[in-house]
Image 1: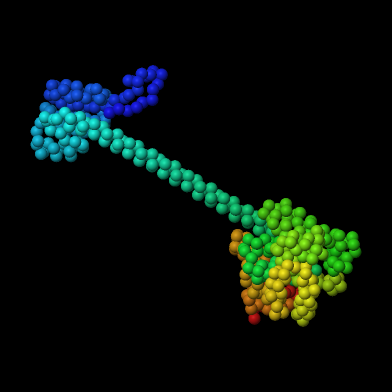
Image 2: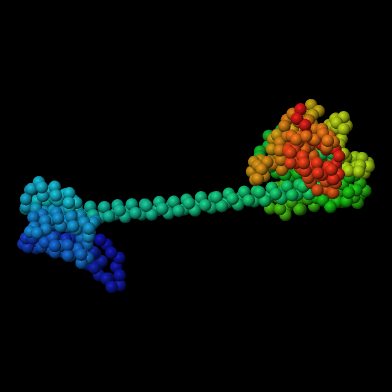
Length: 486
Ligand SMILES: [Fe+2]
Ligand SMILES: [Fe+2]
């Protein structure tokens, strides 16, 4: 049996590059032993032993045969016994028993004890013996190659498993990172939204949150996807962030009545807001919507006077929701100036209904400001005169933000901390009529502008006690807006 070995500097000749397979022959009949040695010496690296003991010594000295040919009948240790013992020293060797006897017991014990591969009887036929030994070497090579291949497969499986584990760990880390980023972003949006709310005292209901609620309903009417809807809702919440820091006179006046200088100041809020949002990673698309929320399809908008083809549909949705809320819920400047606490002002329901009807007329006049699909969907939304704010319970039942944007602690979205029931009725009541189970229909602020309860909070016993303390200290408005279950 031949194996090819890479030549080295010390073994350059062709003859020495071939390594013969190791063959061990054990027989107590010296004549036969020599005969067998001569038969195989040109083909294999042959070692001979005249007894089992001598053969074991050879193995103990480090000779590792691939094939062992042993006579069965030997004085002292039989061939089967020797082969059985040799298994501890050379477990992989292929074993052949030669015997002059056809004793059944010999055959059985050889096969059982010696793990014998082949049984040959004496006298042998040379071609048969040569072929048998060649087969034994082939068998050895195949079986060791199988073991090697199996080991290789096992190793590769282990590597694959390690790779899979590593990939799973990376995926899990990535998921955690994404959740962390989403959570941070949501926190940023909530903080910015609270800041905006604190500065918007000139509306009967919270402007940013109501625009977001209406825009969400419109996105649903237009069957927009979750990701787009999410961008619209966040943009609606933050659309007027650029107004932070504007003087009160600019904020509360009708924009059309402002002086040219104040008009410029007012108009600057879209670009200021967009620039601010662009600096927040993850809000780039929102910033693009915000910068267009005063653009109009007929080119009459600002800051760029874009035409229909250049305005994002998302920006149009925020724009029409913004216009509608301004038309119905903006506190007129004279009313605002006359009020001691503008936040405690409540618009009478009859006036709200009247302003809703007027708003529809204005919207028809300004129809060319909007894409046809957005305009038609919005008019459909308010077609029976019950505009979104009146049906707020029904709209708030649908979370304005998709799931992944929801608050990681409460699972609820920032614009609807607790969804109001569909059968809720909005009422303005003095604190003495507030009861556990009611839901705030406005953000409740202290007179110095600190947010006490966000809109949509269900009043439980503890909240009620806290509100009473504020009320007794005259820190919150005397009348508040609530949803009452009908
Ligand atoms: Fe605006
Ligand atoms: Fe606005």
